[in-house]
Image (cartoon, rainbow, N blue to C red; front, top):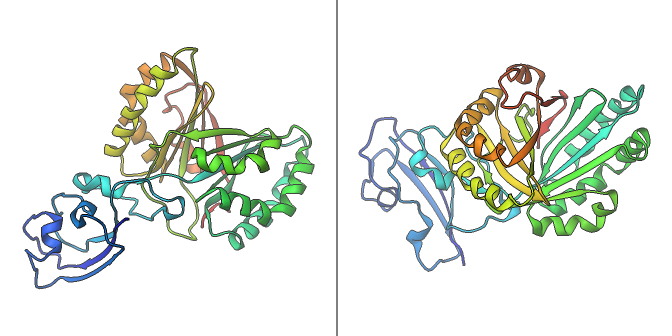
Amino acid sequence: TALYLVANFECSPSPQPKESFVAWVFGSMSPSTASFTLFCCLAAPALISGFALCPLAPLGALRTSLLRPHGALRATQLPSVPKRRAGLSSCNPQMVAQDTHVQIAPYFTVPEGKMGEMKALWSTFYEKTKAGTDSCLYYGFMESGNKVFCREGYKDAAGCLAHLGDVDEPLKKTLEIVGEGGLDLYVYGPQSELDKLQEALGPLGTKFFAGDGSALWFGREEKGSKDSHVTICPTFTVNEGKMEEFQAVLPKFYDVTKKGTDQCLYYGFFQSGNKVFCREGYTSAAGALAHLDDVKDLFGPTLAIATADLAVMGPAAELEKLQEKMPLDAWTHYTMDEGSFWK
């Protein structure tokens, strides 16, 4: 059994005494200007276990979108939470969900003279994706030289498969343009979701990277908005016999990220053999740089036992802000197409 609580508070901007959230909810404060709406469904053994006992911030217009007992979050329940988390550090655990979304990462190598033909299909991809499965979270094309990358995320494996059906026609034309060997496909997500994609995507030579179960989901941009977020995409090749030592550092990355910049949208590590990929998204280049500063003390132990390849995706204006400030001398930048969006 589980308990889900949805509460909306409309309060005056005047300061109120700091009390525990639970005490306030059950009326010990009873502010005269507050209106309280509470909805509970499905009884749980202990009501209080669904709350985080944390000091209540000074009252303004506080809205709690979802309070839940500890445990894994279903893939279809990725919540929208405020992208700014400043001032909520004491309540941070209730603002972070487990990230279970599945990302398809196709890299296309476009033959010389074919880029125009390739780009002409993007509007069709966008149109069909917007009209297609509601499982899609974000979608957009990125370009670097003769390489094209599609950054796309879905709530679960079923959403990935539904999308492939939605864009079947332009996808076939794209594969004809790039020809045999022109597609390099990666998929990142929970192992349980990857298993559902093996039959459909395995024959394409797909590299499947399974999550470690600790990935973080902080929030997303508004539905239907233009996508302008920045992703840092490091892939680590871990030295032989050093994987256990490498994995021992990862909880430190998670801990620092939870306490770090409030511009992080999602963050998590995924493994395939001796390779580890970090999937991380930020609202801007400033957020990406702030995170790199947050974790700078962990780079040494990590790069002492692994090598790293780095790619960064985002709007051209944001990528310019990252020049000469990345932790690695060599990195590939993919410039985002203007049609990219959050669904």
